[in-house]
Image (cartoon, rainbow, N blue to C red):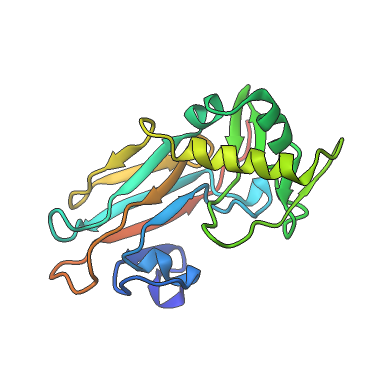
Length: 199
């Protein structure tokens, strides 16, 4: 990612790689980017609170990818109490200090989760260990709710448009764009902002 980083903190998201299965290149490709919360495997306090996106160039009209936002509240509403209770005690196995996939913050549900597509998600569960089938079922229900029709908000980019995404309120992702050979490539700049000190 280093060639895309400016001033050590600004990430230039330019679709120049076409389609790729290399996860590290997907932000710079024309693939769709699956729904996720930013930094989902990090400790909660290390996850960015806000993601700031600024459009430098929207790309070719009608062919450039669009950013998609899905409210976490809508996702939570689509889950059963049992699924939420299971996700509240399930986290990524490789992130022992990471947050639970679902947690309550100020009375609302917040998720730390990424759709890994075909890559297996290794998880660990605390509490009264339900069956692996029950946990996998809760994860499938979460994915189904994330992609349920009707809740997604599309961002239509224009040059100079600035969008600030609260990482505790929205999942975000991207639709597929056309070939990297388009005459104008979409170019967004991303900045992550951690939460400030509490008052």
